Image 1 (tube, rainbow, N blue to C red):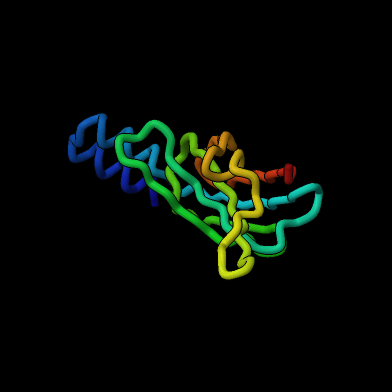
Image 2 (cartoon, rainbow, N blue to C red; image 1 turned 90 degrees about the vertical axis):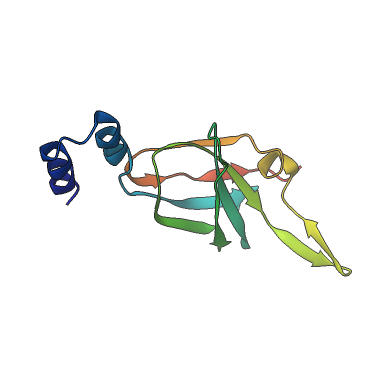
Length: 125
């Protein structure tokens, strides 16, 4: 289907910029597991944040029994992952994952067109 679309664009004389953009926008999925101190993260969320774009895009999915999955919703490129697992403690939400994995995350990932797999091995400091 993508090849048919590209063929039509070329036949119509569409600019190379649009042609290039269509190639870059191929479906990209992303899945894996999250372990904290070698144990699956029971529940939480993972957020993927664009890097270097003029408009920041954030997309989140739940983590259940250490597993997460994003359907085909991304463009290929570099992203930062943020992992959260807040818990209710005495009428407050307390983040149980260290800030270096969420608000100060340095967990970088590179997504290629197609299926991508990335496991995260975190330590609770």
